[in-house]
Length: 409
Ligand code: FE2
Image (cartoon, rainbow, N blue to C red; front, side, top):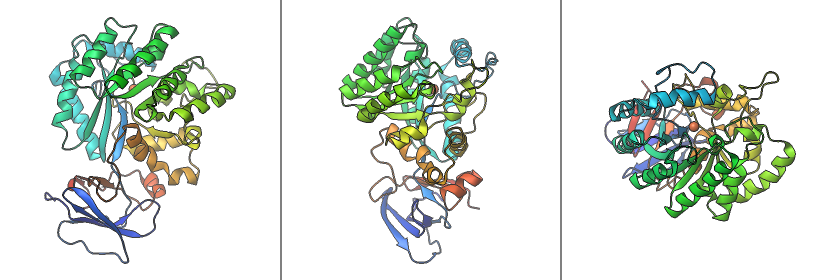
């Protein structure tokens, strides 16, 4: 179906048992109305056949510059985050523009095929040539028809601990990065980590950019940079534009500290991202038994009214050898790891890979409502429970009224 759609019919929307007709005009949603009976598709109408229709999946945390490099130049045998960084540092030396563009685009096509239309990628900017960043800025334009791409300037080897770390970050912002990143738990000292967080939030604020920090991605309960990030966000009233990725150490914090921390988190309104497959794989590596799961406190954050989304983090790279672009796989693992298989959580589980990811990306036009861009996916199932049971590929993906993916026949 090459022309723009006029409508999606027989669509089931979350929280409603009724079928809906969703009309579109000028690439935007026009009307969402209840159908009294099932309808037959007319010209330029897509029949959802009673399946769930939701906004497109959001991949809020991926590393496209490293995607599809697992085993190059060697495999990460220990399975630790730190050996992953070493392997990547060796691979990074051979990066070229064509190498990065080719792998990033291949991965984004895989994502689009899985119903993902919004992606935030981190790009390592601890590279004096900024090869990855420059290539990704090109990819952002080249792939705009199938996906919206946000680029995080990510200092993989530190802002304070890598030569010219701050200057490379400033140059990345000048070149057009959307988001300022950081990695305080990897800096050489706690003081470096604190200073780096204060500096990067100030930089983002000055340039009206978003923030997404790899924060406390470690099982060390003494790693407490989240409180610094939240305090900086609160001080600048910037919480809705600041994301804390990982916060694995929160899974090791004691409850007394968390009770104080959560007061600050609620005031700050920070966004949270958890990458369950990656953290289960990389964390707990220095434990014997019992072994920690290495994930942040996802249900507790949600209960506190904060926005938490799941991301994949890696697709076959030095940190994680697997990954297939199916967000339902990530969701399934996350719900297991976080003790969230109660039906109350399952009923709202799709928010973890749609709405909450959109909140982290600070998307202004996202959802199935009159006037918003006509973007959605048709899932295989009539409820989140059925969708999770099957974990089947999306039946269709619609972007600005056009059909990107159609598996109905
Ligand atoms: Fe990451």
